[in-house]
Length: 266
Image (cartoon, rainbow, N blue to C red; front, side):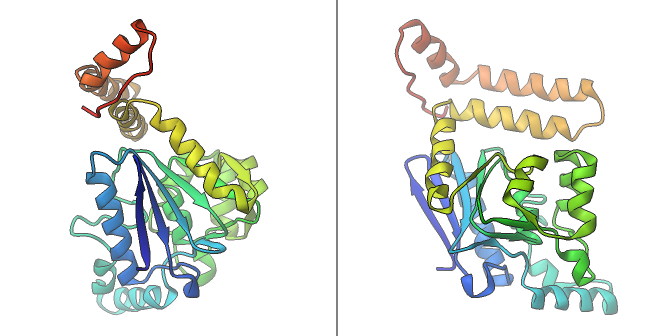
């Protein structure tokens, strides 16, 4: 299997396994990754996902042979059947563009994170990098634009000068520079990366899953609005939804009874 999907308790580990192409995504692998995201999104018992790659590559992006086909099709016909194959029926991308998942996603960046790998990184919430990780928006050096979400998300997630440094130079950013810019949360030795990602996942899983999902949904949708009042309205709706769950009652009861809560996800 080229995209491995393993669930351990409430944590899903998704591994891109195509090292011969530095885990770049052609149509087949993009579809497999889309299926993995759908499986995670729709499994009520899956609370947190970790996305990583094999060996020393996280994801080198879209397979350049496919990108060339897309460019030629768009230049000559104005539309691209190949690009359509790279997405789901709703236009969702394996880079999580137009593919909202309100469950937490952790990126364990184990090496090359470039082009579409950077675009997928922008759709994750917690990012752990190995000390030898390398980040780059390489598309401008190939005559392309990072159209899988990066130009929209990166300036919203980082300070403007930091985002422009990455987007406009198309140069390599090492793990320490990525940490300094706020692109990642933590940098660890390669041999500690897997455990570090699961440590973050276990910490999140201590919390009520629907409360975590409601929190991410409120933050994600609220951040995309143009007015604070709209963000407050989104937050209010999420608050009512979460307060009405069984887990909300369980959390208060467990605190009163001085015991650990037992979350049911409902």
